[in-house]
Picture 1 (cartoon, rainbow, N blue to C red):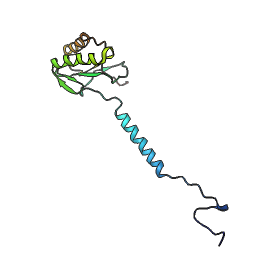
Picture 2 (cartoon, rainbow, N blue to C red):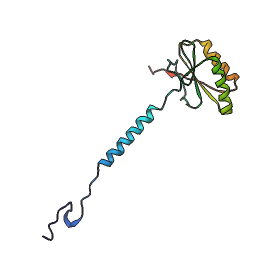
Picture 3 (cartoon, rainbow, N blue to C red):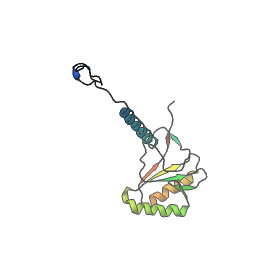
Picture 4 (tube, rainbow, N blue to C red):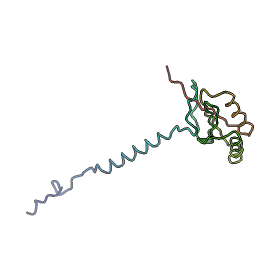
Length: 143
């Protein structure tokens, strides 16, 4: 009975190598969940949901700074909070004081919004001394 041991040993008494699949599945699910969450947060807009105007050329957007939304009805929102014109001016000054010359504003306007309202927002941002003003658009699909 000296040479008849079983228990996973092969010829010559060496153990057979096995690949453990359970930890591999755990790692794959973790990576999958990480990539899904990352891609969901890639292009989130800080403003209200509006129909953005389409353009042929555009640059990738930088999410730093504040987003000002001009809705179709002509109302304003700071990030996702609806605000009045007075609140808008106060928040502009606060942003300029907090961020200094690096302050950045993204104007997120509905394609059917009144141009005069968008122009007013742009003017007030520039009067506050904020030089980095961007207008968010969406790229036209290739035809």
